Image 1 (tube, protein in one colour):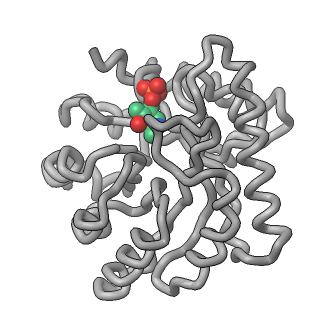
Image 2 (tube, helix red, strand yellow):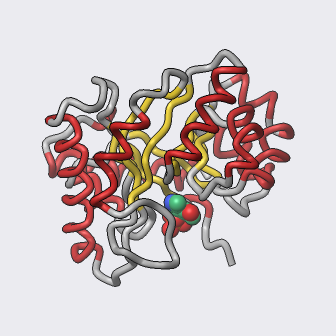
Image 3 (cartoon, helix red, strand yellow):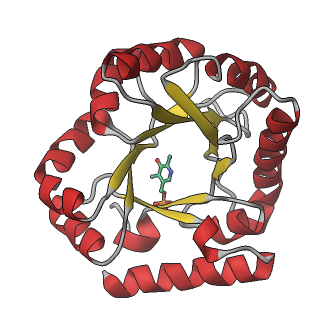
Length: 231
Ligand SMILES: *Cc1c(COP(=O)(O)O)cnc(C)c1O
């Protein structure tokens, strides 16, 4: 596990260097869906500090089971999968950030739960850049209007954008999608509809994270390259 993390960190560092970026501006989100708690514990002990899960139910058991090591190492959990409004309460209780906000209705629900729990919850808007039916997220044309609405919700802190672009064999072919997400972030900032904390780009997975970093990713979500294939 230690070795795997070291290899990924070296690849992140090399991509940063190519792009003239600082290694510390890129956060590794270790995607632990389907991974057993014992292995997640090893990853935390080896230095992983942010974990990504895509289902509230699956994450709940792990987060409870790993409570000791999570507390000892200041680990945070990000929800990266689609969230239904009826699970919003549990999600706010369990996660430090929700990367998959894709409607104002969901954002309002998260806002009211966060408010009740006395939290300010970091959120990202998920964007479906490829227009794929199989994927969650809002269309690019809806990003700015949704950002403007979400930015008004006081218990949410709108941090940036997230995307899962189409899978293409050559990671270089994914580059235009990463550029597009960056352009959308910059547009929202220039339009003055978001706060100064709106700067994150969560993009890049095992197959294409180096290209994503070259195009400005501030969080990369890596599962199989860290934990092995999910079978
Ligand atoms: C599973 C998943 C990942 C990680 O994918 P890998 O290809 O295993 O690195 C990243 N983001 C989301 C939203 C996922 O569901």
